[in-house]
Image (cartoon, rainbow, N blue to C red; front, side, top):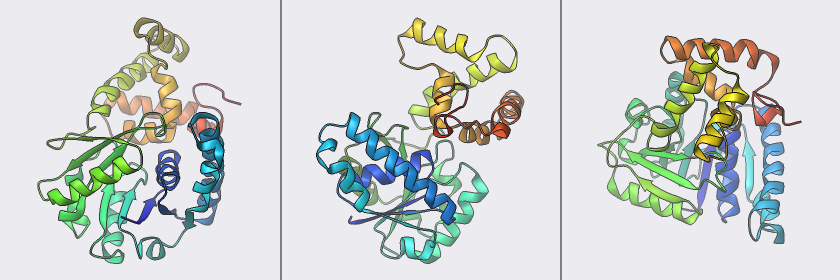
Length: 281
């Protein structure tokens, strides 16, 4: 693989694109508008600064060199014209993803592998819209990719084993630890463990049991974890949390309503905007 395309330049999409470029690949980052791409440029600049401060060797020019390997476009046909691998990181909405894959399947070369970074949807929810079931699987990254460097790889029954191997090798080449799942599981391994924790935290807030600071303090002190669930929400992004919760049961929908009214409507989207459950200004 030489040419990698990342669809979506939000919090995690921008990290995937930057990490891939940092490891020497030519990367095209696609988003739907010039405004979104301008926000992506700001994210890439912040990531370069973070890598210079936190990643060994990045201060010697590697972080800035990665910026030079990133091309940005709002033209989907241009973005995928020569792609060997397309990593999809668009918002976690089933119909939106299906629409994207319908367009993508008609535009990308037949050799191109498609990989969804969906956190909660199964590859089987999307595969029939790709037009290439043998060349489609899930490739899921954790947030703060340069530190939490897992890459969970999950195919469908139709995925070509050679495609899975190629994606495993790609993940290793960009500094990830590939985790192959034997069968489809909503949430993979990481979110199968993490989402119940976040849901429980949301329930405590909705029911008025405790405030976010208290919930986080109990979790950090009681387990030795570096962050509590509401700090994790801020890192993941409250927009993502909202979309996932809105598609859940009554308790999750109540949490989604709280998120929208208290945070999203006030522009408090988490770390990315400087304020969420906590202030980062």
